[in-house]
Amino acid sequence: MNTRSPWTRLLGVLTLALASTAISTGARAQAWPARQPIKLVAVFPPGGSVDQVARILQPVLQQQLGQTVIVDNKGGASGTIGTGAVVSSPPDGYTYAVVFDTHGVNPALIPGLLYDTRKDLATVALIGTSSMVIATHADSPYKTFADVVAAVKAGKNVSYGTIGNGSLGHLAMTLLAKGNHFDLTHVPYRGGGPLMNDAVAGHVPLSIGSVFVTKPHIDSKRLRPLVVTTDKRSPILPDVPTLAESGYAGFNAPAWWAVLAPAKTPPEIVARMNDEINKALKSPEVASKLAAQGIAVNIGTPAAAQAFIDNQIDVWGKVVKANGIKAD
Image 1 (tube, rainbow, N blue to C red):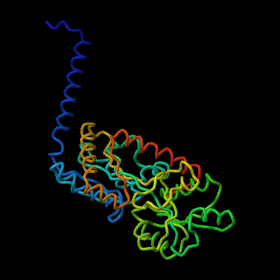
Image 2: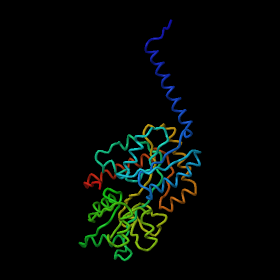
Image 3: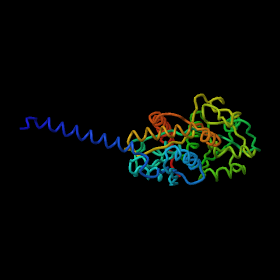
Image 4: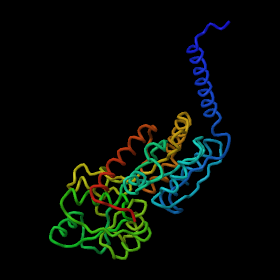
């Protein structure tokens, strides 16, 4: 005769169910990544920095994991199309998004976003950060950023180009100008290529873009760098001062790249993928290739990467809302 109460029996059933779930999750984590190829969804088209970061990581992760790693470009809508595809993928550790700093801007910039950036994704790793560069044409009269501000305050209308409305460059320049009581005129372009074409031709007085986009034209002496937007100088542009050094204390607006997974991906797999990415970033081959793109690698935990992204969402969301900035 079974003398256990119904509550005792229910507790036993629940305990067995939880134990079974834990075993199943642990088994999935142990089996990963043997089942199938891993997909890195680069959320911008081929040729840009997101694509380059994914393709630098791909062969090293493939070798470390002993599993095929595929780069799949799904560009469009400021990275949200590719990110949305990852959100709707099975949370089994086989699909990841490689995102750019627009990921932190999109929640405020794009009305009716079809996923919750904070709740529907798990941050795996922050790959690295990079300065953005405010530059001018080589024949420009502006030798320093102070020259630009002086011209504006003397009544000159000075415009600057970015890769688009709502881009991090647009938000950084808005925050800088509004916060320091001067005005600059924004000229949005559709990507880094068109922006640089006009910048090197002298059609727009200032440009702001990542080191990745701008440095080739600095090297060719067609653009003159004025300042970088991070609180430390760029290692590959060591002679270019920061905005903080130029009188704007505390200003820090880095470009950044990260790897994300669907939200319900088992934590054990997220932790393992984080370990593998950190291992890849420590390799001289990967670090040197990223450094050549102006990217300083970041070695850290998923929690630290998530905290960084949450902060970016908060900071730039306020700038978008305070200035009524709309997407292209």
